[in-house]
Length: 499
Image 1: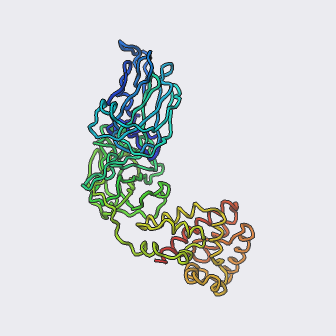
Image 2: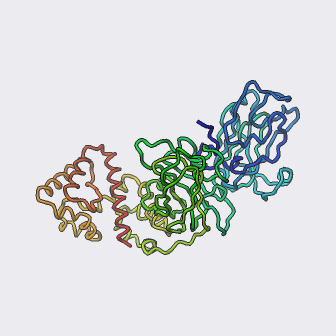
Image 3: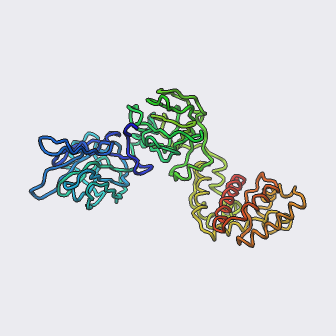
């Protein structure tokens, strides 16, 4: 397999802001007698050839200074390819064994794009990103960042001297705000792939790198599907924006490009990647279109947004070199009557959707919501952050399936109509099925300590009975989470009814 060239994927959802691939440059250092500072930012792993020497000593793939015979330490100033929030730093000493830098620290500053290394050395105000930390020889040394500020430049301090093979500055891009038409998915404008179904042959971060892909391994490629299906990748746009067109490129993918591609979008600022994977609120903005080998195609979008995230679907698998999302930054979201209604709903009204008092408080605290995707996503996310007692409280606000609906109407007056509609299949059931449901519910409650919860909308009595019997063999802890999942479905349906 060809060597993978691109941003290393040590941290999913983070970008190596210093990589040469995204425009990072080593500007100035105190000393690089044995090995040049420019090697620090190479995207590929460091190499070692025991047979190669220069007129100054052993050739090393990294930055190496002379042995210091005076006080002080060595340093290197780096211009980040993309300004951003630094979350972690990797000071990699691969192949430096008896000559590695024993201690290192990293500092950051903000300066003009054209600031020189000399100006930064003499005038910049530096803030600590990673304090002085012991370095392991011949190893990756990953350090969490202690700062949440955005930086344009960093200074790597090597104490007192020695060699470092690579510097990785992992973070979240924070580009300058703009109102013009840009590629909102581009890494240079803050775009970032978050999660993918598969990235076997090359990392997902390559999809939004600058420029056209120079080689196949510089794109995003999945393994062959067994059986054929669909692969996908989810990206966060650098800024919320309205799209007018998309560019899908398959450069260098000839016998392994996808047959078709489609793109979905949604608006949910700050959405957790795990919730995006399972969200039901993606809206298709590009229907499946045929792709071709080693090609670049432009597509108009069906819905303009604004959007915060994109999901690229490829059928069945293969490689995409670049995805471009052309549009204008925008935070103006169209008014949605359902969202507006629920942003002003009372606690009593929200309790009709879910009987957990802590869920009602948590959902209300997250308002105002700006879109259906955000509203429904946060409703579910906050539900899953509750505990057993909260789930059991919500369960008590449901009638027993198969019980006498008239008898329960007084107890559950606020949701009686909804419950009756949700259990309409029971009302039409035969006597034998109703008896089986009644007995099954008694056995279920005796075993698990709570009533049987199922999202009954559209289910007939026979289907409900079959599900109850199927779930009777579950362990109590497993069954509780299944019931909580059914409650999450019910809550969504009832929130829609509140609108």
